[in-house]
Length: 390
Image (cartoon, rainbow, N blue to C red; front, side, top):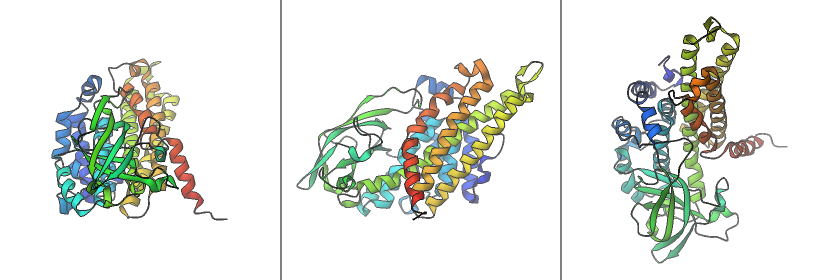
């Protein structure tokens, strides 16, 4: 690494963990990421390495065998993973997100059933919200769950499910009251085990980037789930539970943006000092100096915004505004920085011989994932207006 990216982290333990992950990324991830990415192959050895470092249990409470580290630490870890290969930070995202939802809102029975299995992990997690007719407007979902004695019968279809073929438990957003007003009061979240009759992962969706991790469809066809699998044990609170968990996801995606932008900058400043044009390294041309200066300024700001949002989440107060600001800025500047990196590299940056084209394909996902930039702006606007009453 050109510098210790953990230096901005305040907690010494977290700083050491993030630094160690960074060393592992440089040693184990960067040399093989292109091969896995171009083959669109799930990186089992790298995931095993993440598991051995305890990263899947990073937010699981100690009482259930986890590390119970800070969100600041988690954000730093995700920055480092994404600096090596963005897909690795995606593989861990829904696992940590669902684990957080169970830790915060699950019944004690649900915590005992799932949390110890998420540490190693014995099972992995997936989140199911999006549907063919419901994306940014999550309250418009059509998947229903109807009470039938001690069970619920779930019917519907989900899209864009990360870890869809490999998860052992799925946090599924459903409607238990289709007439509720406001709509969110009719939404309930269920913990659905893989292999439950009537529940199946469908085709794998091909993507521009974000390779190596599967993204799938899911179907519920008269899927019978015990009432004990309602997250938290009561109907009508699923929307709030999942939106709170998405704050964790937005910190993750913001961190991914920082990591990808940092990787693009690292590659660019090294290349600019080696590549010569008109008799001198291109770094000595003012146009490239200005471009690189703008890149690092944006990355620094995005890093600090993301860590600030993570610390806000650690404080236990509502952090949707802070997470939205970080996610919006970090992902937008990631797109800008990878395009600048391609400009600095010229034609070779457009080839598959270097990772620049991978960064370029990965960056758009982060502008969309866990709520589009327009959704983040709406969240931010609603948050700031509360501080300026008329």
